[in-house]
Length: 338
Image (cartoon, rainbow, N blue to C red; front, side):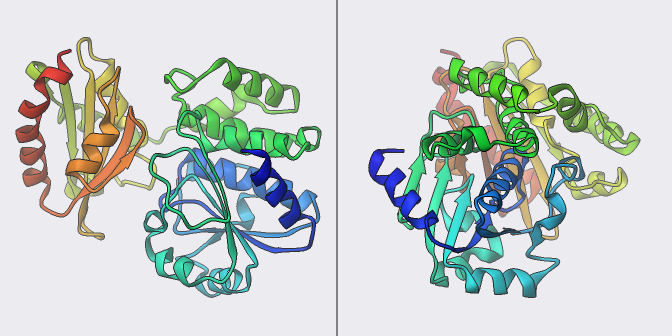
């Protein structure tokens, strides 16, 4: 953030505000961690703050301090609408376009509040009075830490906030293995541990707590994996029927796409997940090196995100989507084999 934006934020927070904090639809660890950390910070500053999530999120994230105060828009529609309507200031975290909030999109477009955006994805929209956007950042959680630091308040970071921020950084960096993890990221992590983040406990809560049905679903996903050596690509498909057979719960497929990249010689990994309720195929893309899945997702699958981790969607059947995907790979053969 530059000095002008810092001064603008300080001015906005120097007076009482009715604040709403919003993550993207289907929020992940970074989205929930950053919103909760910011909520704790603003509450500790004496501000009236509320988190409104567009929809529900995985059970393995619901241990974080303050989770019970989040308003799920789908479950608590009236309260959520009232909070947004009365808001004087809205923070949008871990997304940069209202379209990433699903049913909230027209509501946010009509809101009278001023906006502050904190996000690390590419191509931000121009809707905020303060835009803190940095695509080189590991996570929105690391940006929230920086945001607090810019305001001179890192000494106010509590153990609750530290646990939330640590969670988002850990999950969005793949446990600190992605290229976006910098020495600065590790410096922030060290400070969070000093401030009370329980790193081992957090890792166990996120990664080491499974149900038998989730492990069986993972087995199904790995059995469905198709390896295309010619394109150094692996993809997984999961149908709605298969999800139902293994009692799928939100978040159960988290991390499945990464298994493709554990194979020697594979640079591009994808998972296609059928969602009959929404009438779409949800897609996650992962890559290694300089193959940009962000550009691939934007061009072909109405998506985007980061160069090595992005999402997308398809409106045709699971089989048609996979067939179309494979047909595209010849155009990228040179890049994938570079």
